[in-house]
Length: 334
Image (cartoon, rainbow, N blue to C red; front, side):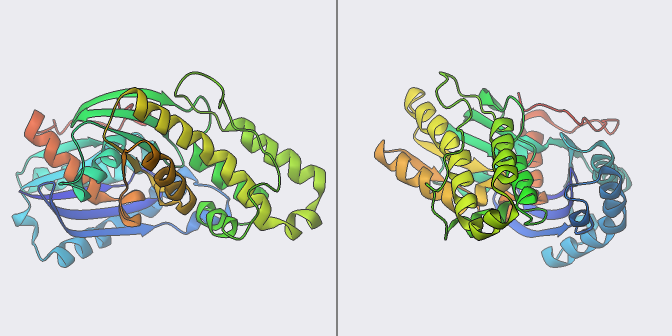
């Protein structure tokens, strides 16, 4: 099947064309730059930017895939979780195409999309049973996957997502928005032991996460030492913060991998691109003989290829969605 996916849950407008859950023929992603002046995503602006871009991105995706709309067998789109106004743009656009071309439509859970990105890219290497960390600006979850649509949520953040912590710390340090990749880049030249920031819930016997305390600790440190010392030790502060943020993710994933006897652990979501996280995970998982897999950067960020692939698998298991399906901003994976 030739599947068209649409993703508009936050500040990326994306349209992709995928064959089954096997081959990406196009995956066009347009990131909105308008939010950088505000230090975070402004929901109303996000909706307007999606409206401006969706048709252009759609046409580019078709052109790159070498198909015309009549060749699309299945239309899919994200229906949650996300910003409700942003979701409605992509959801209604894809439903309108399905109705107009008399083709089936499938509404896709954004979190399941992130999870499926690894199934799409690691088809032969990924065991059916595995663990995945869904880590982004809005989500931090540890999920046991027993197969497509068979998930057990082992743990999640009690407050803030790890990606949000990165962006807020970047803002505190004057690094702009979004700042996760800047923190990661600067941290490579910094001293990870420069300052001991707290590891949220690290000693608790569960698989949950907490990042609000870490954000507060960095804010208090910046206020205490002053701007001059912050700028003089920017790389060291980034490295110290990053080590505190990532150590908990790695500890939880490795412990769960041993407890549930999985053969592989995967990363998904925007923070899955973090270089230090991949380094730590590879190092610790290799000690217990567990495979470590992650998608390429273009499938870590919000993208429509993962939505199209998930929609195909969901169509095969459950059939089409009703065209009356609405956006669900707080949709859960499980």
